[in-house]
Amino acid sequence: MSRYDLFRRRIAPIAFLVAIALIARDSCEKQHRTHATVELDFGDARSRVRAVDVRVVVGEDTVATYQRTALGAGGIATCRFEAAVPGEDGELRIDVDLGSEHRQLTRRFHAVEGATVHVAVGDALDAPDGRDGRDGRDGRDGR
Image 1 (cartoon, one colour):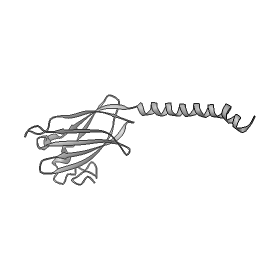
Image 2 (cartoon, rainbow, N blue to C red):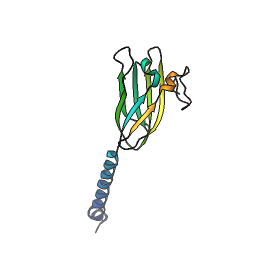
Image 3 (cartoon, rainbow, N blue to C red):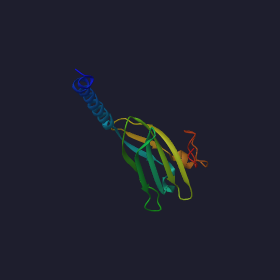
Image 4 (cartoon, rainbow, N blue to C red):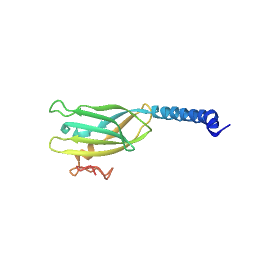
């Protein structure tokens, strides 16, 4: 039996089955998502919030976005959205429009299947410099 015949009859089918198994495994892992509800708590600053944009980031990938705009002068309504994230840990990058200024905040989260993740951002919005002491990257410049 030549090398070509050996490859064609023995090795090629095994390599094909291994490739199919790897593709199936990768597909199953991508479908595993943690489903959670994210709720933003603006505290006393709720009446000043005109709009909010949120990016849900896991690793380097943005896996979800959320946008809400206040309809009237009374501030923004409750900001709650569903997120399905790969894994359980991630980061919320929040851009808040207060009318006269923008605040960019970052909050890390740990999601549990079916849970509600409460994210308090009111302290950072009420602070004059945009820092609430929770994360060094909070503030007007997003760093």
